[in-house]
Image (cartoon, rainbow, N blue to C red; front, side, top):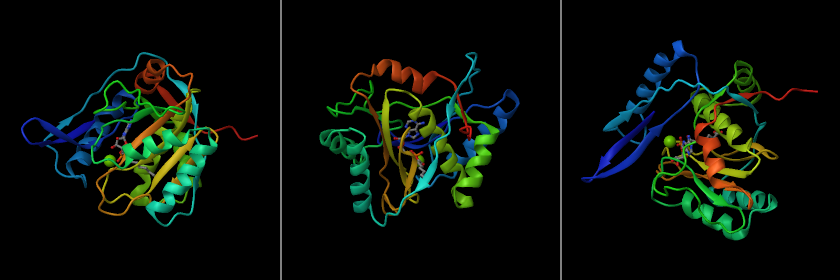
Length: 247
Ligand code: WAQ
Ligand code: MG
């Protein structure tokens, strides 16, 4: 689902988006939930809501559910320090870290994520205004149960967090993806995250102040990544997120 608001004569502002994988008979209910979500969104009332329901013919592959942790952070400034530390440790250059924050702190709204090469900081998403939309991912029943059991999440935030963990788990499962940083563009949602296959899913409270309409996602790719392959995986490959087997 994607919902937008008109600005001026030809412009559009992104209001809300959502995607999942489900069984045929659940799809009508989920489409209805997504439409309701768009109609009551804190970013404003949409002028257009587009719902796409597609049959998946490719057999989904599995990805591991990232482990969730929450770090202590009391301000946006502190969050920048923490995020920078982690990104540098993952081998992302200072230049690329700076380019990433430029996107996250920009007033331009993208519907998808920016893809950035981790040493040069070059942006490789084909459409810079739109970004790359990660799609075709869903949680297995046991992954959903694990999220509700292990993380102390407020009830009102559960859907947002579960969707973010599943998106981050699909994204981190690609071998050429080094890390992802996310700030919600919802003015009332001030927790963001940094994720990678080694860090897991790290929730960062107070990543922005309440009322701030900015936000975005930056996905860092390894130097040797083939952007078109990564984009194909993120947009098209169906992936079911399953809990890690405990030994
Ligand atoms: N694929 C790529 N980028 C996306 C997608 C997607 N499917 N959905 C959203 N984005 C980008 C887009 O630029 C949005 O402006 C930005 O991310 C933020 O999207 O544990 O709600 O849907 O409490 O506002 C994090 C939860 C919630 C943290 C993130 O993002 C926690 C959130 P939003
Ligand atoms: Mg949003």
